[in-house]
Length: 439
Image 1: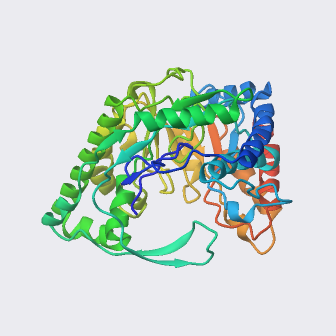
Image 2 (image 1 turned 180 degrees about the vertical axis):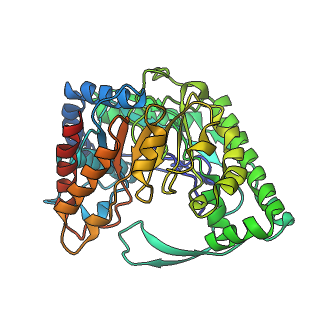
């Protein structure tokens, strides 16, 4: 299924067609409740540590361009390879119990082993139960899996967009919320965590806005790149139709009161947390987009010219990004030599500097103007043996180049640690030691 991702732990994907948790049973066995409450006590002990506030302030200083040492966080982890001494072994039996247990075990595990500057807030978020009709078109792909326990697989996508008539396949999502079911989830969560952690119903605190990712899923990367040159009129009509569909769906989320602040420990774009002093910290039911972070990325445009990137990417992304109080841009595409085409984006605050970017050039263009979202190479974690010296050398070189920049460091896209979780633990230790030199 073609899915546009939501970067927080709410259990729904805003623009994928589905009825989220509508049929999930809220009957929780007593054994599951005991397991969840035991984990919740540990989770709460971490969340109430005084150092959480200090960590929030470090992220805030980077996001507000006030300086400080680079802050670090790991994301997109190969969790199927990380279990040590049953720390990640699930014990619940019910579907809902397993979801909550999975969230808490991973949070506690990361805090203990490769936390970096991660922040754990003392609250449990219950979901809004949302029905979504989606875009009306799904990816059709041949899938080659190498590990059934992993979410990573190779895919060959079949093109479903060949002519103007095919654009009719793309529909505007219709978003609805089941308030009765949402209330039932809240009451269930409150029963489970009573006396340990507060529970709130929280809406969507940020979207992964990457319409060209959707188009790649519907057409295949090669056909997208070819058609940008061979049939630009079709591709303009395609991205305009999808842009309008996204915008209409966002309007519905706003009208239904389903947007929540991402000025918190929520991932922004492909980067880190959204703590800032420049947006509302209101953790209430509804936050307008003007008080939220937005983000955008056209990853496939790393393979086209800056002019084409502007024509088919930035020019259409502006409709989305102008609605937000602060913005994050980019993911894996190298942007070090393209900051000039991003300058017109309103409230642009942070730009991704991927493993394929020239960090020195990026620093020259971004120092004092934008925060840097540095993505070191995760490939070292997959070597036959873990090359500590190469990891340290890469980080030293990049941190030196970025002196004077406000920098977050996100180790991500971790497809394997060769079944040696300690590699990631050690990577984070080395990164923290190196970052400390650049206070």
